[in-house]
Length: 217
Image (cartoon, rainbow, N blue to C red; front, side, top):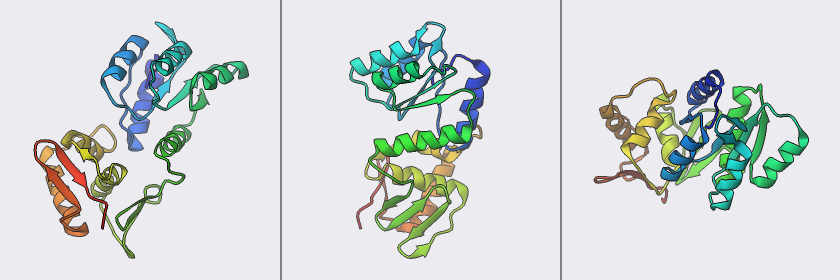
């Protein structure tokens, strides 16, 4: 998230973390440029009026460099021409301030679904069906009752099924609200519990790298 207003930035960071998003927040274009050059991000929340430049020019720079990260522009500018220019430069969505955190979270989920080629929130993989909004899970035809941390962990696995996930990424999924600390050994406990409920073959350990969720039956 690139937002120079300290109060708005902190409220968005905490509010989105409480809605199960991991947010890295910076206040200047030069800092955003640095972290985006070195990281793989799912979406950029972009303010336009920034202390070291114009957000639209930064967006244009990203697109010209071949960076296709989804971008949601969040700004107090209301002019239609400005919105059109942002979309033409490659923005995926536009939200004006003041905004509802629930609406922002919904727009984020919609952008991420489109990026992943999904039209629905529902996650389906290897006979497991999860509705993240309704907080329900089915394994085959049977409902599966999971405590919050196991639910978060399974959601992280389903979202990246077939891909190796590091311990740190999974610990972040367990934290959920981005505030509480989670002991590293708790990850092992919850993975053990999920293996008991889903079958030991579902979650494989990749030595030295992390874990991978096997979706094929």
